[in-house]
Image (tube, rainbow, N blue to C red; front, side):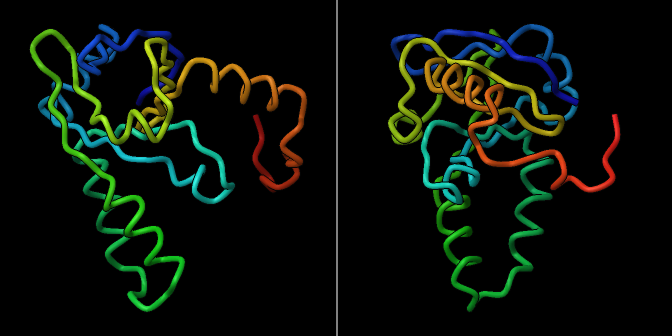
Length: 155
C-alpha cells in the first residue's frame, strides 16, 4: 500500500528517483516492473496535470477490468485508447530511478519539480505547481463536490 506525498526532482533525462521507503515493496510486489500512463480523472474533467504509476500486477488487474468493457461503447473505447494507448512499461533501476516517457512528461507538463502521491495501489505523479493549485482548490472546496457523495463512508 502506497501512501504519502514526496516532492522529488526529474533529472535532465526525465528520470525520477522513487523514494527509498517504497523501493523494497516495489521490488517485492512487482520486481521493479511498473506501468505509467495518463490519469483518467483528467480525461473526465477536462484538465491535465497528472500521471498514474502502477506496479505491474496492479496494472494487469486494471487491464483485465478494461478488457471486459463493451467494445462498442463510446466511453469504453475512449477510455481504452486513452489509458491503455498511452501506457508505457518502465523498470525501476538498481538506484531506484525510472524514466518517464517524453510524451507523458509533456502531457502532464512535467518540469524539474514533481510530486509523487501514494494512492494505495498506485501513485499519482504531478507537476509540483499543478499539485499545489489542485491542493488549494480541494482545501477551498472549489471543485463543487462534497463528502455526501461518498454515502456511508465513515472515518
